[in-house]
Amino acid sequence: MRFDKDTRNLLAKTIAACRRRLIEDVTDQLRGVFGLHPDGTVLPLDKLTHLSPDQNSAARRLRDLLDHYTVGAAGKDSDRRKAAYERMVLEISFTVLNRLAALRLCEERGLVVECVRQGTTSAGFQMFERISGGALGGRYDTYRVFLECMFDELAGDLGVLFDRMTAQSAVFPSERCMEEGRREPQECGTLRGADPGPGRRG
Image 1 (cartoon, rainbow, N blue to C red):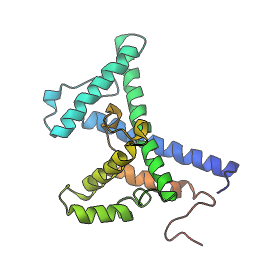
Image 2: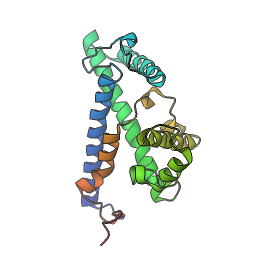
Image 3: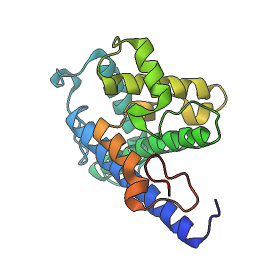
């Protein structure tokens, strides 16, 4: 595929749209699930009785990350916490986007099984889902575990990108965000010369 001006513009438009969706989704989850608000308000963990043990652990890691960023920010306390929050949202969002984009590139090069391109109907996930037999929860919960297994497999060679032990890995995209992001290239316009996917071939 030649990266002419139109293709570069389309790629930039697609990436920007995916970033926007992720930023909105991460912000919603930080506020609605983890009790971390854009104005810097942090709800006490003992008030978040809806959290599962894994979510409680993630909430602690996120609070530690927010405190770390706040220390390095400038200005009065309220401004520092807002700036730290915005930085945290951006870093979480970009971490997710970079990982999914890297998996997508690996798919195209035949380095991994199909896992992102068709979402929960990807060939690799369908095999994983059959093997798991419903033991990992609902379909999207299982898909999350599947992708996290892919991240862990690649972390051996690309630890900086795929290391799930970082606090920036504590938030995973919602099902709606993931599906909308997967459709984004079609909504922005298929990249010239790229594989258009099932049902879009001429």
